[in-house]
Image 1 (cartoon, helix red, strand yellow):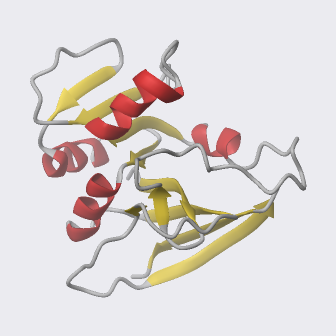
Image 2 (cartoon, one colour; image 1 turned 90 degrees about the vertical axis):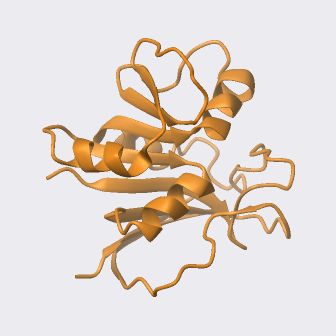
Length: 176
């Protein structure tokens, strides 16, 4: 069965964006500027990308307005807006049903790209199988928190870690 994987970067103090929603601070410490890190290897393990509308809008207007960065992957944008689907970009509003349906289909893993509202809904549904979190060598002090308060504790099993250019990748799976 396909795994639902959260792959995301956060500041050392737990933010995925600054208080204005910007992510330009996501950069290494300059110690290994040519080290591309884990993204190129990770992206080959997924064929589906799930993201919220705010993340989608930021990508198409700011981060990559010229070309969709997940070309060749099927992307699902969770939104209540009535938008017309595009090639390999599907707009839908029921996150829970989408994940349940996708998980049972054949394919590679499913990437939860962001943002925090999507992540926290999936945590509440107990649907994230793997947490792949990159710690950025920055303390923001304020912004959009990755994790909100949850009703129950979630036990994780450490899988691995690596570091490069000041980043630290931490990989955990749900502990059964």
